[in-house]
Length: 457
Image 1 (cartoon, rainbow, N blue to C red):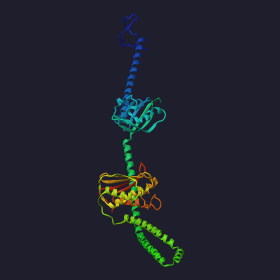
Image 2 (image 1 turned 90 degrees about the vertical axis):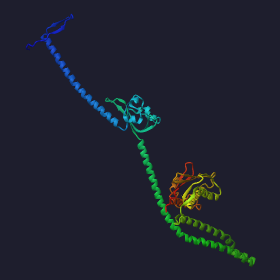
Image 3 (image 1 turned 30 degrees about the vertical axis):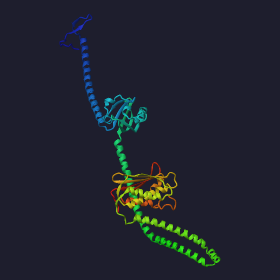
Image 4 (image 1 turned 90 degrees about the horizontal axis):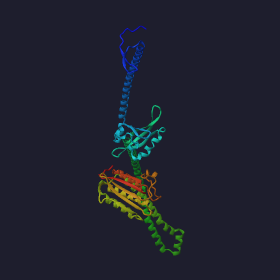
C-alpha cells in the first residue's frame, strides 16, 4: 500500500493517565477509523432507507384507516366490535344514530347496556357461542336514550387475529322497523284485496242466483196459486159434505145409516179429511211464503229510499220476533235514543227480523238464552250488531252461511233463504252483512248501513 501523503489531522487521544495528549495517527489506527466511518455511512444509508420505507407504510396505513373509516361511516347497518368478555371496543356512526349514544361513551362498556331488557337473554348468549357457531338473523332491540326500542336483525360472528387467536366478536345489525311496517302494510293490503275479491265473487254469485231464483219463483207462482186456491175450495166442500151426511142420516133408518157409514168408513173419512186438508194448506202456505220471499227479493218494484228512525225499526223488528217465541230470551239493547238514516225502511226491517229470528232459533230450548243488539255509527255508516249466546257455527260452514237454501236447522224448520235474502238486500242499498263466531261464544251478525241512503238499482 502506498503511503497517503495527504495531511493527516492531529487527533487528541486520552491516555491511561487521563491526560489528553495530541497523538499522531498511525497507519493501522487510520485504517480502523476508515472502517468505522464506512460502517457508519452504511448504517446511516440503511436508516434513511428504513425511514423512507416506514413513511411509505405509514402513509399506506393511514390511507387504509381512512378507507376503513369511510366504509364504516357510510354503513347503514349498525356495527359493534367486542372483546371476548363482551366489552365494546368500537362502534360505527350507524350505531350511534340508532342508539343516540356516542362511541366514547360506549367504549369498554358491556354490550348488554345498549340492548333492551327483552333482548338480554339472547344477548347474554352471544359470548357463549364465540369460536363455534355464528348467530344469523336473530332479532334484538336496541335501547335508545329516550327509552324506545329499535328492532334489529342481528348477525354475530367470532373475530380472530392474524395468528388465529380468538379476539372477540363482531355484531352487525340491520334495522327492521321500517321493513317490518312495510311488510305488515303489504300483508294487510293483500288480505284486504283477497277479501274484496272474495266479496266480489260472492256478490256476483248471489246476483246470478238471484236472477235464477227470480225466474223459478215466477214459474212456481202460478201452479202454487192453483194448489192453494183448490185446497181452500176443498176445505169448504168438505164442510158441506159433512153437513150433508149429517142431514141425510137424520132421515134414514138408524140401523141402515150405521151400516152404510161402517161400510164406506165415513167416520174415518170425516176424521181424516180435515187434517189432510189442513196439512196440505200448511204445505201450500209454506211454499207460497218461500216464493213470496224470492219474489220480494228479486222484484223490480222496490220502495224508494226515505228518512226513517233506525232505533225504532230495530226495536219493532225485535219485538215482533220475541212476542212469537215460546220462551222469551233476555234481550240487551245498546242503542242511541235516536238515529235517522235514509234508505228503504221495509228492507231494513226484514233483514233485522231475519237476524233476530235466526238468533232465537239457534237458542231454542237453551237455558239462559240472551241476545245483545248494538247500534253505533262512525259518521258515514250505521253498524248494527246482533249477538246471541248460542252454540255458534263450525268454521267450515261460515263461507256457506249466506248461500241459498243452506241451513243448519232441522228439516222443516228453516228454508235456508233468510240470510241469503238479507245478504242481497244489504248489498242492494249499499250496505254489507257479515257473520262471525264471537270470541265470547255464539254468533254475531254485523249489518252495515250507509247513512246517506246509497242504493244499488
